[in-house]
Image (cartoon, rainbow, N blue to C red):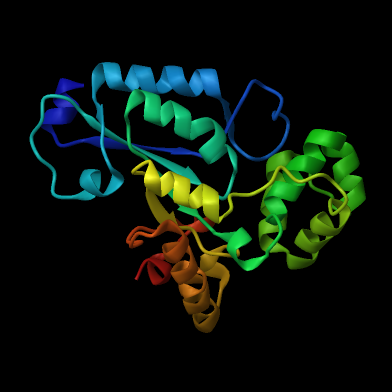
Length: 235
């Protein structure tokens, strides 16, 4: 760890949903139980320090302890209800990359619907219900990323399922009031390298102003949906 710090190394940890207990297992959304999340942060604080993401990305400084940054993706209500109390108790900052779908009256993203289907029905029944020949959960998720009709089949099949909810404007404001940073994650969460130029420009911009207004802070950081990008998208 001392060598890593001396060489200006840092580590960014990417989280999605933090949950109470194991009840949200079996789906596709990466989920960490809150007790494990707390232990992870305590272990990090034992060996280094957690700093704001933008500070970690600046010109590196020679330090005795390595630095870490925490990020959270998507619009899960657990960001405020479960993760935020731990962050505040341990006094560590984080950046939340949000889509802000609730600000536009949009329902849950297809992967959240698929997550609920998989948790309720399991893989085999879900595959039959949406008409996919994928063999694994990962293959099904990848097929949905690439196929709009399959995404729509997932949404239609899961439309009657109770939603886990999304962050609303009050939740976003609460994150800001707790001195957390807000980043943009696009409104529709599409795979950006597959889009034409006009669609790419639209995805990078539409919804950002509304999210800035809800967060009452300037948004200067961005996370690629599905973690996928190419040189054109990065430019």
